[in-house]
Image 1 (cartoon, rainbow, N blue to C red):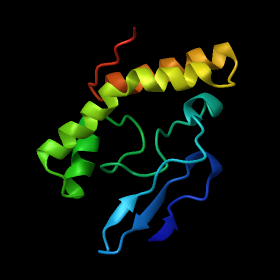
Image 2 (image 1 turned 90 degrees about the horizontal axis):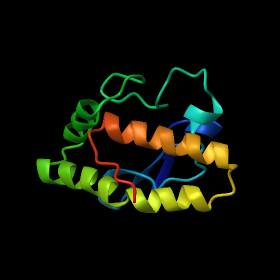
Image 3 (image 1 turned 135 degrees about the vertical axis):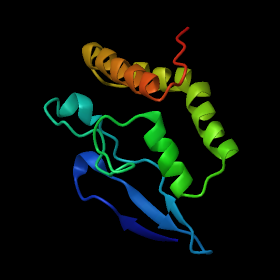
Image 4 (image 1 turned 180 degrees about the vertical axis):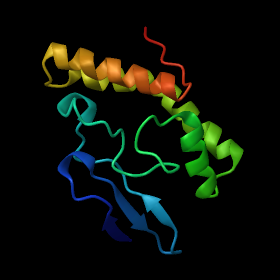
Length: 125
């Protein structure tokens, strides 16, 4: 697999992989930083343009991206379902982090806001 970095910015690391069939894939996440918390004045929500936008990104924008990647409706629905199913795990990671309690709460608020923008259930125990 080949790797290509899309952004050299520390706060916006996205990498692409090319598999043996030449298919381009998004690399697993690494070096994560929630820029909504760290850079409060930054108006951009993404380093990458999603459906022609970097701000006010909604579910329809991710749907358009998924369609441009030739994902079918079932694959798209399953992607959203994975987010819904893993919400509690994400909360657990945040709560076990070394972040101060106030930053953990900010992180959870940003997470829930993102889930709502994507019309995904964010059910807390």
